[in-house]
Length: 120
Image (cartoon, rainbow, N blue to C red; front, side, top):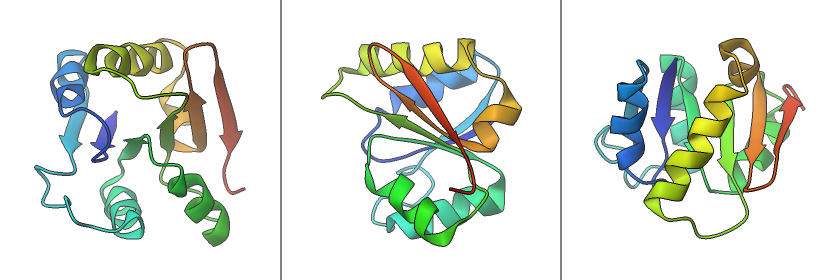
C-alpha cells in the first residue's frame, strides 16, 4: 500500500511502514510541510496514497466534498509517543485490507478501530 504521512504523525512511521513492505512518504520530505489539508488530500488522491494523520479537519473536508478518496487513517484519543503511533498504525494494518483502507475513513485509538465508507 502507499501512504502519505501528515505532519502531526511521527516521521518514524515512514521507516516502520517501509519495513512492512509499504511505500510511504512523510509530508515534510515531500515538500508539503506548509501545505493546506486540502492540498495534502489532493496530492494523496493524485498519487493513490492513504493519508495517515492526527488532524481532525480531514474527515470534515472529505465529507464536505463527498469524495470517494483518498483513504484516511485518523489517529485519535491523545498525544501519542512515536512508539504509540507506530503501534496504532500496526493495529490498523493487521486488522484491515487495502480495499477497506483506500475507500474509508479509519479512526483508531487505544481501544478500538472504527471505519466509515466514503463518500460520506
